Image 1 (cartoon, one colour):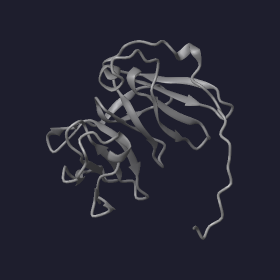
Image 2 (tube, one colour):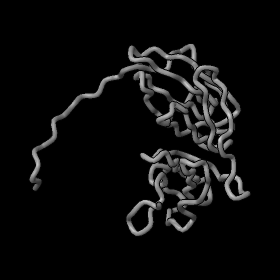
Image 3 (tube, rainbow, N blue to C red):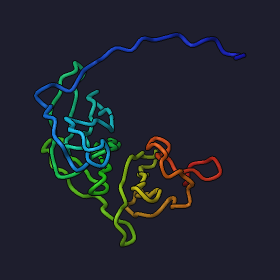
Image 4 (cartoon, rainbow, N blue to C red):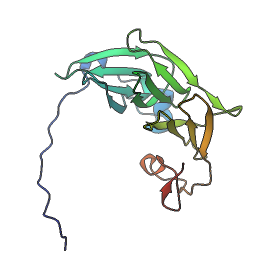
Length: 191
């Protein structure tokens, strides 16, 4: 029994699809490890809206970033040697991307250039960054789950990097990615 009314069913509908001009199924190293070697034309992640209402998404196996306008039109913003995953747009307009191969990078949406922001912390390279969140004070938290450990690096708004969490989080070896996104200790997020 619930004290709340049954939620209204809202049917879903497709807003937009990756256009065929951006599809070319091929085998990639990322797909070898994450899709059993299947040929893939894309694997979209990291949705985030900018202040103009455009939706940015990453395409992990092909190292691409797309911008989708309010009408559903797709624009290719960047392609680079990386596996972009999480994407967030900071209050100052910077587009931050967690890239599994390259660490935390910054995208200039005008030029399409992608530059490193943090590629290591405390002289240790990342294991495989996955997703990120930006706090109200501008601190950047992102997961570094890799295939072996689960860590939560933090870049303070002052630019100083530190570890907010470590491999102390308990995660089953074959847990799906979603359950690894936010390391927890005693039921609360690492801080």
